[in-house]
Length: 224
Image 1: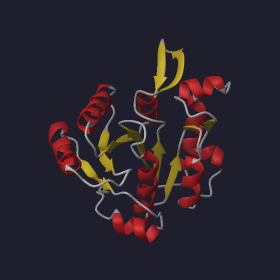
Image 2: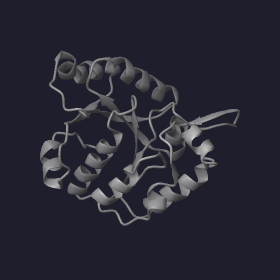
Image 3: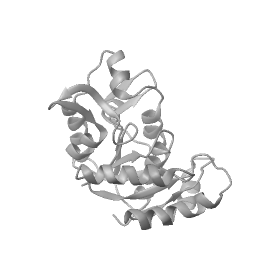
Image 4: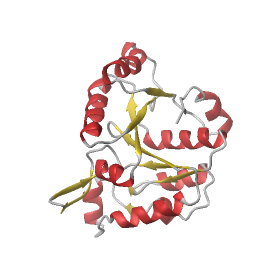
């Protein structure tokens, strides 16, 4: 059973779409694929993934923690009078592990987003801690545009500092704008600078029909 933790370089990079795309592509290759979004602050991403990937798991397993405000998880859950509990996430993941060949875990933001500002072992608990404690390999979702070299290399370095194993980097065209020089060259430059494999680019997707997704994303490297 394989586990992949989807993290992002910054807000709006396209984690949920990449999670969906990976689910579609892996299922097309014959794998049984489950999804878990341990923490969600506002929105319906987990419900959307459940519906679009035709998952029959209870939404409380797919999304153990949901807070109503679009804030950093530590603040959103504090305001909702909730407290992050790793054992609850671990239990949900174990349930999915018993059922699927691969589980894709979508993090709430980037690696250094705090899930709990209260001290655990004398410091806050971050997404990077969650990825490490779940034993998942990390896939970094990066934007294509200007500035992404800095954001991506910082994320790679932080993942390495935590001892996380990086499966690769996926670029996401979340806005569908025309491609200037940075958008055309950033993937190859970042692969060269980071020495981390670029798995591909998820293009801007207008419709989420499975046939369209399979056709548009067939070049994503799934040699896991």
